[in-house]
Image: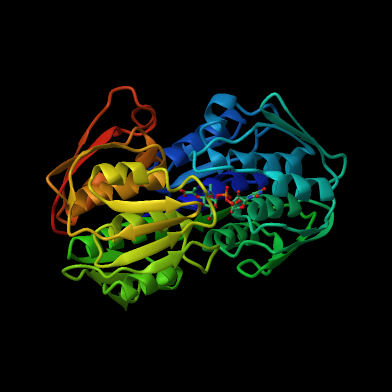
Length: 425
Ligand code: EPU
């Protein structure tokens, strides 16, 4: 199967296109709900967005304006906060609702606010909205207190139009930070250091239109790799950048999974039973928090006791309750889960409350004996394009039951609950 374009690049690159003085074309966009929501937000802000074949959109920012951003849609998406940086950069003002997104623990935006304030913006957060104003946005030296992907990207977006040079220290190094910088460079911005922990942006110039192809989604790829690992499968995932997958590949190797790289593809051969491993989520190049829940699902059936420590989002063990329904043996103590592997999970009806937890439950359904019904709401569709078709393509016994009127149905054709049964990939 083929991995699609990266969700967390897509939701940053689309608003970043509004910084240009001419249309921008983005290719390799995944058909996921978060992209659909971002498109609605761009249109709501005045931009013209036109489809141009599968995975391709043209964004014409000519009529983009600084009016208040719609709170219903922005409240459903974390990445709506990028409209703050973009609007401040273009108009010296922004009025954006507090961002939504998955409920995975506290998600403060103090580092975004601190950075914009250092660049000369007055920020007021009240009544669920963030209002920002800057007579002149100027470059600044900003040290992030925590390594934040969102703050790094948002400050880069503002900095490309600010007067003078901005230095972002302790910047996030995730590949999608680099992807956004690649787009901005193609638009004519002056940025060095993206992908390291110090990013320098010389701002102020006008930006032009360009074409940009999103990098592949390593979390989507990792999810299918873990599915193969847990079912003793033999699967090739194409369209990946193997370097980006290394934290996951290394852990799978420790668990006894054979992963071989062939150009832009990885082949994964799962053992009869995985071995227990210990892992800790960390900013890139550490083990990604977004792959933690699929990996935790895998470890429920590994031989031995694993420990998983989640350092980024303290709510990401909530899905453990659902795994317990399926017979998993897990004890969570603060930020660490101790997982005593069982021979097999038993299928059960389970309920997802956020994206990656939902993906973890779908995988658990594949690892289990009997049928599992995952009430996934619209969560899994936020970040996975047709997860049931891609898993079925790999040999899984999985079908979707459409729930009429769910968010994803309104935006893309498909949506609802997924049914997974034990299957070999
Ligand atoms: N943080 C702060 N203050 C801030 C910003 C972040 O304390 O101002 C803390 C957070 O509480 C968290 C840590 O810093 O503990 C990292 O947060 P970060 O800002 O990096 O996360 P984010 O930008 O809100 C993005 C992805 C998440 C992914 C994280 C970490 C998007 C839209 N979301 O979130 O993706 O988990 O980076 O890699 O890019 C997902 O795809 O399922 C997902 C949640």
